[in-house]
Length: 441
Image (cartoon, rainbow, N blue to C red):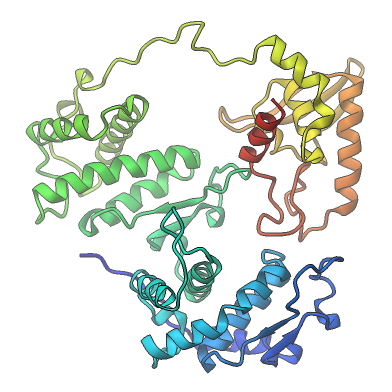
């Protein structure tokens, strides 16, 4: 059994929506050639449709959809073209909601998992095709409902982040996450309800001192272990009675479940040991009465094979030479300075994409230095020498991005940053640069 928290629209939140939807935004039909859209409209408009018509939507739903559009447009996290494409979905969405949820007043009234199934079924009845990935060929219909629902839930939810079942680490002060990856959610939905407060209390500590990746590993380890224990002892609300026999039974299941996951198999066990150790030292009331070192033994951990020189990752010199000779062919060309710095410093892509334009370049009597933080090892203000030629490339990027940046589109003063779109204020995804290099090869 699981419970889903549903925020209730408060008077203050409804007033905020009403105040936002004033003036032009009150209209049910938006024409994107109107001057109000000048800051959002690209110079070249390729779509034949130039209107967004909200008139078919029910009153409460209509206000929430409009608010979603206005808020996301003004934040530059929704492109105007995408908004127009979503607008095409309104007629069928209105018909679906009238048929399936005639009394709905807010998207938060929906049980979203059931609603998405019913929405897909309705669209298939309307003749929509399913592709080879078992998704609707016109995926904007599914995306619209999912995004508006999640946006409104987040808007109405006034709880602290740690009270929620899904944490957005971007909203947690001091949380360590890599901005060039679209990974920032920690979901406790898979943790059995009796153990969820325990898992949240532990991760609340971890998220302030460990990276997002480590916290995600810890959470997965807890989910596997606590789900197994809950299945064995559905009446348990703590781990006080946990015994070595329980651990042996878990390990027997765990070896089978993680077969072929050599790295994860080891990491999840380390996370479990750290969890049991910490909650005992911290005096959690749910902690096992038996000491953690009498529950998990050293021999329970598999030996990791030592890495040979052949296992060490490196790029052959011939490939590097080929890369340098053909660097001007890298597409898109905006990635060229990133690759120049990768070659010059030996840093990870994530570290290059974390550079700040206001402090990444320094000149001393010994020459030019590139300055930045090494995220994985938490080395701050790390400096490496660079040539005059590389410094010239960096300075050109600094000058360009500094001129285009504002506190709104680049609040962290990133050297490599998206100034508009969904990733506004964040660097490009490192995976895209890897893919560009693969294409060049």
